[in-house]
Image (cartoon, rainbow, N blue to C red; front, top):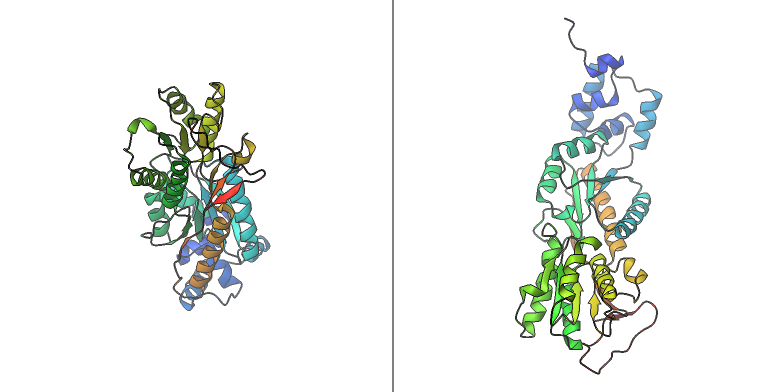
Length: 367
């Protein structure tokens, strides 16, 4: 029986991947040594040159072109299954910032039942040095640990968890939800329902905490019948909204933890002949594109999604550059400003004669 040939023997001559494996470094590091980059440590340079000599590796034209392309940092934007409109804004901002920073950006969708070992292999095969984690991946402890143990630098979006060992950017979800609920209370609402998100999202917990804190501050008892959980999707909120709007007495206001679920509430209300905002106030969170597509336009929390993504990509590239120079990267925790945008779906409860002033166009911010 013939002995099995190695990958390089089958291909006839060693590849840049063979050199990287033998040297115990990334393909990116090999390419930099071959191109005489100044940003390579002496130790790595010696390892690569020794592997090149032992394998008798000679770069071909294709490998040279790969090496030239790999001079920039290779980074990945990892996402799960967010709102398609929000994802579009994230992707556009990520590509724009990566291009400005001279980095190569790869988009990778991770399924809920992901195999972490396979994720690591995929990123290694692509020569990925660092990854931006979009929500809810930013809250996945197992994924973060797996990537970090593989030497992949991480920056998280949509996270205000100051205990994380890597850089992150987000808003104060708890405070934002508290402020929006206070706005409803100040309008006169006392029977306010809340649609939360899935427990795997830390943002879902923080938004519920903020909502409940405002109710308690006003001396209102927390009523489990007025809270239910969705999945941050339109479809997941329909059944709960139908039950809530069938209650007697029904809520005078419903605060949904994202705009998709708020839009579902509006659809159910319309099917029941409930006028918004005259008979029901509805508010959302995120200020995604659907907030201005629905009619009437949605009152919601606006968070600077594009700014968060741009900051995350820029921060990741800066950290990778510091590592390349042999420096310890600085970790930063950034909390950006949010705004409550009042549009057309909020008003005092129907048993009050007061009506708030409506603003045409994009709405107005509430401090």
